Length: 78
Image (cartoon, rainbow, N blue to C red; front, side, top):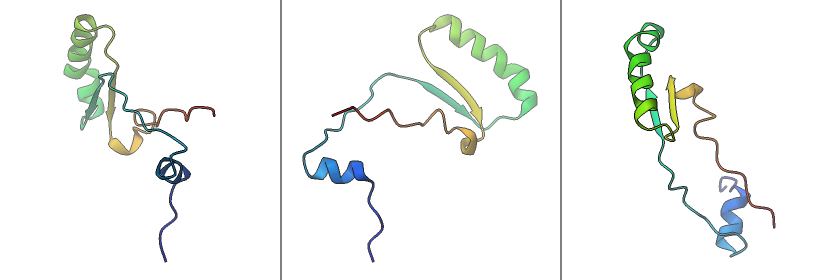
């Protein structure tokens, strides 16, 4: 039995939808604990945000809690 395919994949294969790539840069930081987040990481984030104020920066620590960071874009209305 084949696994269920997401409808988007079927739509692309049938030519009903077109894929696009989001080329906007972003920075995601993983692998730190609460002490690091409140200490040196906070200083680094402040420096980065001052240097590149338009760059989205996500300090998520644990990848399993980063769901908002990796949320797929909304599907265009047809």
